[in-house]
Structure formats: C-alpha cells, structure tokens
Image 1 (cartoon, one colour):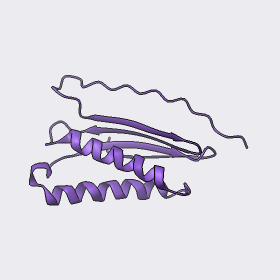
Image 2 (tube, rainbow, N blue to C red):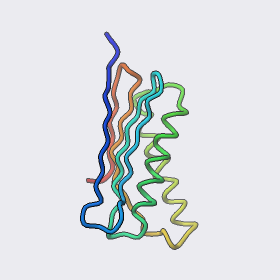
Image 3 (cartoon, helix red, strand yellow):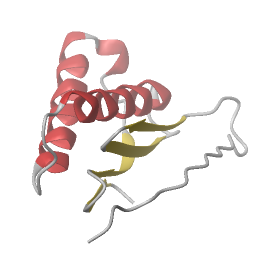
Length: 118
C-alpha cells in the first residue's frame, strides 16, 4: 500500500462578529500530519481562547507522539478537554469558554478523524 498524499489549504472568516473566534492549524512533518479546526462559541465568554487552546494542544500532542495509533487522536482530544476544564477552574474570567473541534491525523498510511460539537 502506498503512502497517502495530502494538500492543505486554510480559510477562516469572522462572519458577523467583531473578532474571529476560529482556530485553523495543521502539522506537516515527515510522517506526522495533523489538521485542526476549532470554532469558539460566540455566545460564550472567550470562545477564541478556547479554540486556540484546544487547537494548539492537539497540534502539539500530535507533534510529540511517537506512533499514531487508532486511539491517539481520542487521547489527544481528551487531553485538550482536560486543559480547558483546568483553565476554567483556575480563572473565573474564562469559566464559560467553549469551542467545537474537528481534528484529523495521519501517519501517511491511515487517517484518523475526530470531532466534538457540531
């Protein structure tokens, strides 16, 4: 079986809001590939912080994992969720921050996709 090839482009739009609460990022290093789209929930406080926190955490975890397995992405998303919950406990100013997430990662042979929210 041959290696999968990917082409990545990103685009985000703040819509009718005053500031953009989206996070879009990707990792393209040798056999490690990952993509993240997180959409901070605008009706909640600090959605942009939640989106950036989750997005950066997922990409960092993907970058440092040694082997991508079937449950790696799930564990990565759970780690990002724990970080959000901890930040909410520590800082009352961000206790209502929320985000959705779609993430994917690949080792070049398999692609794993996960999402949280709509």
